[in-house]
Structures are given as C-alpha cells and as structure tokens.
Image (cartoon, rainbow, N blue to C red; front, top):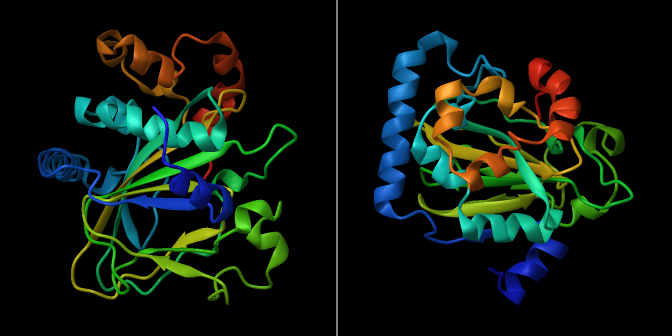
Amino acid sequence: MSISPEHARRLDEEGYVRLEGFIGPERRRRLVDRIDALFAAEGEGAGSEFGQEPAARRLANLADKGEVFIECVVDETVRAYVAHVLGPRFKLSSLNARSANPHRAESQPLHVDAGALPDEAGYWVCNTVWLLDDFTTDNGALRVVPGSHRSGRRPQDALADPGRPHPDEVLVTGRAGDLVVMNSHLWHGGTANRTDRRRLALHAFYCRWDKPQQQYQKALLRPETQAALSPAARAMLALDDPANDAMSAEGGRSGFMK
C-alpha cells in the first residue's frame, strides 16, 4: 500500500499526521472492552512489565494479551505509514495502552521516544497513537513541536525546561476512532487531563529493523501466544530473527521509558 502525497508531506515536514475515523466502531469497542478487562484483572500491577506513572494507568505487553491487539500491529494501512518513516524493514518495538487519569495536573515533558536521535541511516522510531477516546484541549491530548524531528536534537539537550510550553507547540486533538502516526524523533508529550473522565489511547511503537526493541517480544510472549501467531505477525514481532535476539534481549529485560 502507499499513502497519499499530502500525508507523506505532513510526515516529512511536520512529523505527524492524523487519520480521521480510521478505527471503526466495532474495532474500537473490542479494543476498549479488552483494555478495561485487563485493567480490572491486573489491578495495581497494570503496566508493571514496562513502567507505571502517577498521572496515568498503563498496560504493557499487549501483544501477549489478545488477538485484537495483534490485528493492530499487522494492519496494512498502519504498516504503510510506518514504512514511510522508517523504510521497508521495521518491527514492533512495544505495544502499550495509556489512560490519562481524570483531574491530574501533571503533563509529560517534551521528549523523543526511547531518547532516540536519527543516525546515519535516518529515522528509526515511529509511534502510532490509536485514539480510543476523544482527544480534547482539556483531557490530556498530545502536544507536539512540528518539524522538531529534523533538528537532530533532543528537547532535554536543547531546552532549559522541556516541561514548559514551547512557543511552537500545537495540540493534537481528534475524535475517538482517529489514528495519529508520528515520527518519534518529534518532540512531544502528553498534557494534563483536567476533566472528570479518563483519556484512553493505544500506542503501537515501531523501530527500524537494525535497532533493539523497547520490549523484547520473544521473551515476553507466552509459548502458546507465539504458536498461534500468523507468519506476518511473527515477522512483525521479530520472533524468528537471531540478530534481533542478540540486540534486544538486554534492553527488553530492563525496559526504558520514553
């Protein structure tokens, strides 16, 4: 598949693009129902495979927790957009959910995912944000600094305080069912949820083939999960690649927060 010239331009120049109404109502319902069931089952331990934060509830290792999540990972349209950023060879780095808690004033500082800077081969991290609730100006929507992915710098190295508003930042709002594809070298961060309702999203994070996964999928997925995966899913999770085993094992065990 290919993406439209306008969306390609936005990814190249601005670093992100929003696909309106990408998640159909039935797919969105299945995702929300499964996420809610996992939050209930995992309780206080939810997200502990990766990391927890005071202002949000998290789930991690979702590739091991339901076919509905695998469907997102291998979606052909999503893969076409990720390929525009990373090139033809890439893999899932991590698959997590984040629910910004109501009445929480904390915003994330501007950051790049995994602390990544482009290298001599180009960009190597790309995130897809599946909007499962509306993203509004008040409920913890994403803020981004358009074009900052081309700076070759991380916000903590360029700004006196990455937690403060940036003069060039914009708020990425949208409706439940939209999808945001983002070059993860783009400076970005979640904002405070000042409403009385949660703000839920799924984050499918990809990396270039020659980089370690943020969460080492082979070590995290149960044998029965691995056995049930399609060839396309196994390839996207890099389950049969010895080179990925060598580079991802240490990082996957320790994890690193974006």
